[in-house]
Length: 217
Image (cartoon, rainbow, N blue to C red; front, side, top):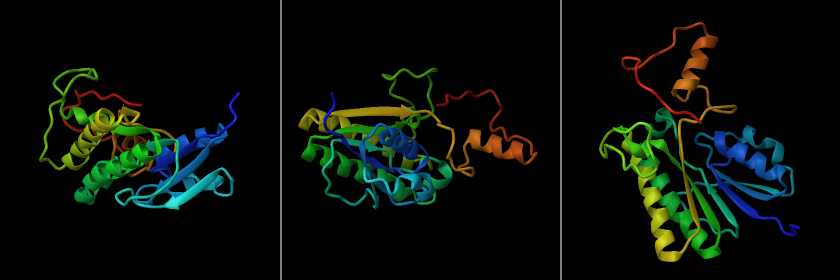
């Protein structure tokens, strides 16, 4: 019988995916701290939990350190849409690099488990379909998308180095073009584009020659 609740830190918790994770944790009776700077997250996504005694909301940017006591860290903070992450590519790279270092340092100090939300973009422009986890990718480290792609790659590197050097309990998930309720309509990705264009009676935008494929979550 479980007698104590886990203290969960969710970075990017007011965002599309983070808010759904918070819903699940709160509905399970866990303690949750939501960390978000509201660059792409919205307070309305987690508003229903604000008065709950098991929930705490902190406006904070993960590129800055924070001192908390937690059992689990769910590290989802980073803009995922090209429209958003290319607005300030240096800040995007810093969010993945410094933000992940800060969260891993917190996990090392507290003994917390940490889950990194990575991306299928770590495979770059893959030459293998579908991509198995051991595939190392075909990447462009200097293109306009590299602030996100390379940011996530170094975040993964940091996770595994902290595991090897400090025995931090890590997990990494590579998410493929997620869609669903609370996603930002104008995020510029294919599912939201199709839905918005269809609702407005517009033609659907197909990039390239239309023969490309994509995996979705």
